[in-house]
Length: 303
Image 1 (cartoon, helix red, strand yellow):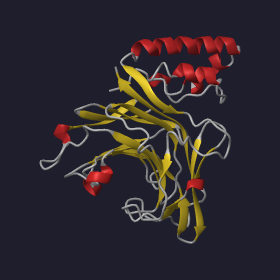
Image 2 (cartoon, helix red, strand yellow; image 1 turned 180 degrees about the vertical axis):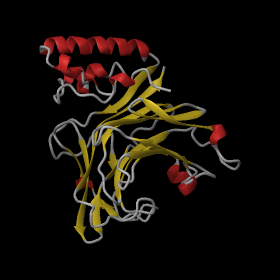
Image 3 (cartoon, helix red, strand yellow; image 1 turned 135 degrees about the horizontal axis):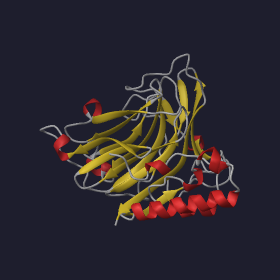
């Protein structure tokens, strides 16, 4: 299945962003991932700026009519001065070097997560000594949760053996019930040794860890921003890349002893892990620092 707005996703107007007012207009069209990054081809890109803007305005109107079933309820565009922290009303930090349940190598620190001054969040992994790394992880726990809707982020992932970027969700009740009973929705994971493949996965009681229900999707176009998302309803979770659906998980997808746990609020997480049971450790070819760039994160609720 192809999202009717996929044609408007992941494009760029001559490499130059439009002004902030056009970004805000993009909020009216949930399917148009970022209206200030539309590519219109060389013919339109060479038009006077007013003409190009007019065509983009028409695209917004078309998308509005097609996507009237969604209402934007939460977003972060990571605007702010270079070096500043992400919005503390929206994000909090996870810190420490606990292995994080996966034998990961990094020590999560606040200073490894910052804005670049150009509308991006940067999560940077640094090698501090042989076998020692710092990186960053942020979450909306206690600040924002969502139950059902469209959840998306525009992300440029790093690459390299042992590098593990992710955009994911955990059940709000994890502190009370633990994992995997909390549930987990991995909107996007990538292991850097497979730079052109991303994975969407769900974990819950009876299907967690290596037994999680997962599917992979090949990326095209080299290293650039892609829009990773899910459409989550009471009975299903659909996974998308750049508006193209590649996997659907339903109650019928679960093993016989599995429990559907996706009927409660979840919070969002962004992180860049180093090493771990799945990707393995970095090797001599892995270059540092590594950076995961996030252009925006948006959440829509069904009307």
